[in-house]
Length: 358
Image 1 (cartoon, rainbow, N blue to C red):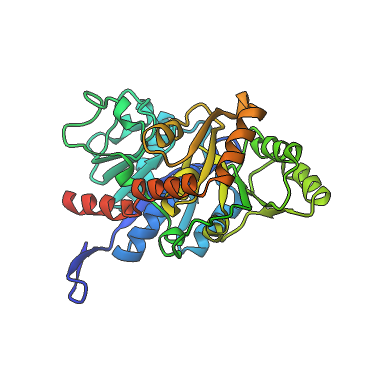
Image 2: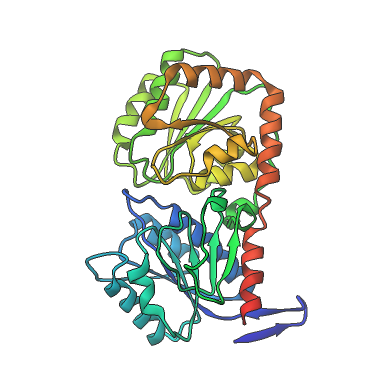
């Protein structure tokens, strides 16, 4: 399975990779996007053939995978993460003679993993919360800043290698290959983005707050994911306010990050991307399982975390927002802290560990 490339002086892994992951308006697309980041790197530098094995993915994600040169195979099953799911996944791996299985999703727990005892293929699990009773894996990746509060002892196989912490944050090539970000002394450009689905409509909460603040000389862009079911109501803002632009499903997210002087976002996958660029941000948790944003704020100073969006306080938001846009020094320090936290080499570190297993 190896090819020696004399020019590069390294082994290139020409392997078959299967990624078991799902995405929809309920669970979002964060799991898919970080798997996509690993897949892009594996294909670009190691000539891998990649198949996304899924029960459900939005059409626009399927189109994106095709555009990137990846395949998708739809599973017919009733319950994600069930023993049947595991059996179908194992059968697919064996039928296609695939080399690596990557699994990412909160529904995959002990029932699912129990089907992978004594398999020939290698397994990488991408985790966040540590909620399974046990994991069968060669590599277990948890890039969450909450990893120190998760004890994997006694819940993995003897040979499982743990790759823990922000050093193993996977980033898509779009971000890694983008130009550098510089902090603007005068903050006027505001980006609002709450992921691919925004299930609690946090976007509208922030837009309403900015409207009540009645600030002048601001340019606001709202990045709306294709799975956002409330997108129709956001059009009213763009019609009522000339300086609010609604952008639907942009394929150039990195350009929008670089455009912004301040980003208001959720505490999930997008926040680590924003930290990598060094864009100052205000962040909220929009689902209970988002654990990293408070650590990114309190420990690393790379965002201003204001708690759960369900407990939104207009006064706290207004004070924080005005303080940030008026303080070049605070935004500059936040930018530096974000860049120091996420260095963009997570893909490389993960694949180096993959090579060690062979």
